[in-house]
Image: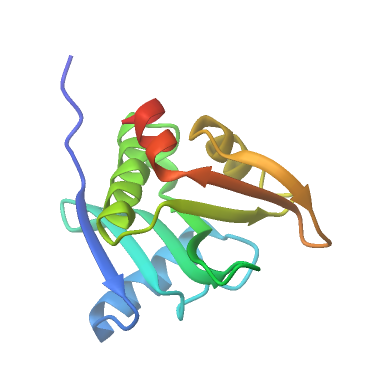
Length: 151
């Protein structure tokens, strides 16, 4: 059995080069996410294989009621041919390891009911549901707990 080729991880903190934005816009259209893509989000992780985008994971920075800042998991886009692959899951874990290096200790998410794939992934990564709002369900995860369980 042939081993799956790993992905190249690129993190864009804020702005990225024009050619990357063009490729990303085409990828977002291909994935048809059903909502506006947040190009202004703080951390955009792009996974490529053979120079083609296969996965994009995006986090924005939010403040909680105590004034702490956390990355908020807002987008995961996976190429149709790459969905349900171990490499996609491993890529998400790599983004979380990178957030830990940036001195974050937790991740939050606000996931709409219609985004079942994100809820499944959040639960697989050890996110805990702690409430809901008009937008969807609220989740929280300790980065060390995610990495202990998944990577």
